[in-house]
Length: 503
Picture (cartoon, rainbow, N blue to C red):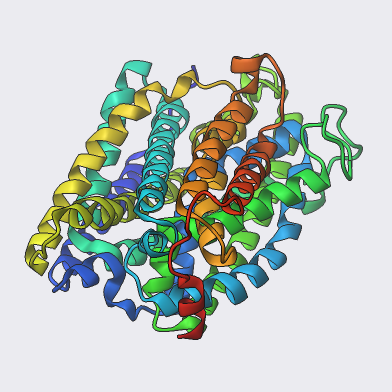
């Protein structure tokens, strides 16, 4: 095990960053006068800030670590997913955002109840909570097991304590500051992440002597070649395009964390600008991580003893943390680690906040049948945020048992129910004859299909690429829902789609 090289200056930067996040939470706690202030930022936040916050939320420490490792191990093929993003923006900006903004709901799942029944609202909310709980647990697992412990050279037994500390800091500033605190910290964290990536690239280029040194002289044998379409290969252009388009569209049209940010802006134009900011920032950072993967690959090739006997293929996901700990000079390590913590905490804070909103609106208030004062709503949301923090820390302790590298782990946990979650929203928004029970059955089967595809090797002894989880699960659910909706066994609810569009 390599020894940590963090200095007092590194620790000052890291601890100072954590204290700064807590101060933001306490500052905004005094500005929240209503549940709408706490959960939606008063519906009048600046578009670019909310857009950067959405980027920071969805672009977690998982992606920050997995993309350089993916580049090192499999080559640049995975980055063809960026070609899908302009098409994603067009669909989201001109189909989803106008519909959702006109409804003026607080929870993404409110619109499902009138259109396709309360059972679909509850099922979608349950899918969302399962997905986000797994997502946050994976983030804590990765930060503690794959970043902090390897960098510091600590024993595996300290993972629980590291997870608890990360959870406590995030819970405090999230539960006190609400969405305003979350958005501001997300903006700060995004620029720290952005700067940390650039810093690491510059340091590697400096050590190698010239920018051209990071470009391989010839195509490495272990890198995947260009493939337009092939269901048998790990990544092809069509597979990556469909999977990426599906993930972004499904998330934009059904995930509470995304819809919560549409509703935090003033109007449709503001929401569109917000989403465009998120897409642009995502493209820039992913391109930077591609370059970082190239740079790390070149650095390891130039320093064969860097991995201490571990092959590059086996240690691909650990190269970046190891580089931070053993190569970066004093102070710089602290900045990059703060960037990794920033990516993790921005996702955790948004996940806790949106999960709390879903539990309050979709389950507690929906079941009470009576109103609650604004002060009680805020207190309830804060208590629920604390409870969520405890649950995700405990779940993080078992995440290491899932097969696959970091990218596969992400798809098998945090993205597993993305397609099934979007299905009832698609039926509600685009299928006028959608029937509640038909949609419910299709959504259930979609979730089962996602599990079968994601864990096909473990359950069926069949190897199916993790990139097919979203398109296959959504297609199966859509087919079942459409067929059952056109059978004469059930009446459909009042058409909310027409109401939403005509407002």
